[in-house]
Amino acid sequence: MSRISAILKSPASLIKRYGSQAQGGQKNWKFALKKFVFNCSQYNRYGLYSDDIKDYDNSVIEEALRRLPKDVLDARNFRLVRAAQLDFLKTYLPEEKWISYEQDLEYRYLQPYIDEIVAERMEINEFGCSNYSEYDWPKGELK
Image (tube, rainbow, N blue to C red; front, side):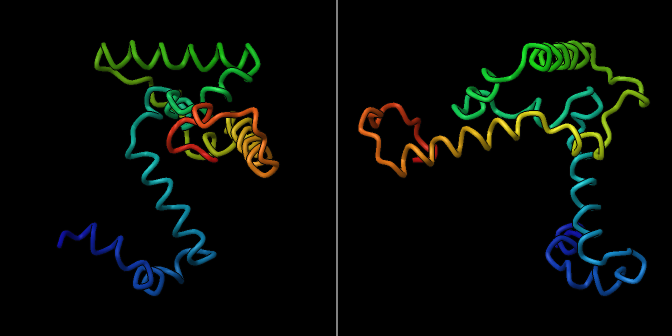
């Protein structure tokens, strides 16, 4: 078993070992792990937020993107095109332009729209609207 998998399987031992060093114990440990995973993903080096890389083939995400204001959508498209160009050139943005984990947490622009769409679909399902056929709901979506 590798050292990393041993660490990930036993968070209680880490909390015991490093709990006194971290203020907040388990909460800080989870935050540090999420930040580590965010930095390992490396899309922040291209200037992308986590909402920029969500799967747009998902019908909820597609509807959320349709509802975005034009300026937010244009900024998202610019970041995606810039990231594609940087990837083609096999380079990253300068380090001062990288997106930090804290910036990513503050700028979750799709989440309010996603919550709204999910609530709408749950309400439609709750009231049993018959004007929505089975084919209106993509497979794997909320029903």
